[in-house]
Image (cartoon, rainbow, N blue to C red; front, side):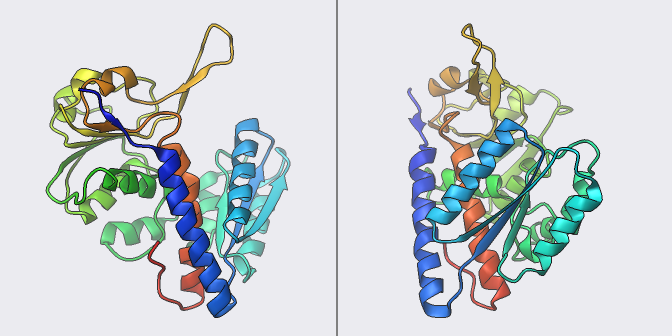
Length: 294
């Protein structure tokens, strides 16, 4: 068996096209142009590149892009002041503070300061509570991307045995909640799970989000299962440049799984696409308009 590749590029392009169409409709019908503000503290090259990508894709979708850069020496009060200003700006519908932040800044304090109606990262405790309660709210972008990619393989997730390896607030917990909404039977596994390989082998749908390169081996995967690899890990190479790999031993998974996301070219591309989706949803909510169907 050679697994089908779930192409993140194609999926992300489809989502972004839906966003652009909805933004054009909102602008024409209501004079509403969604705006996304990104706050970057420090000069980490990876974070800076990610912020640039977000800005370009925001503008390409017809939305307003706001970028606020602070030095690595910025204080927590300075960051909170920027967040407060953005909370009060009616042209800003989504706020994202790029993580990680320098050590003198408490990321939890920053997340708590963001207006939950503008929390397009879905990390505010109110956002998490709405998700856990099954109520409408903003959901973390990467889990939304995972769900979308799983649905490109399965017309319905109802009744599937799903195993999520990882219990982070950013991916593991919210993706489990989303799968429960879809009526999957969900197990959250983690570092203290006994006999993790056998737990993984139960899964019709396996989501790996542990941050350990090649952690999930081929013989942990149920034949024919769908594997969503959230991991993005840089491992050394002989040329010194390194390469990106996922949390799943990809070559092994190809021989067992029915479908698998590659790294790179998989879930990572979906994260920014759903950041745009969340911004449009936040703009519609702020304007008292129905939630978009994208």
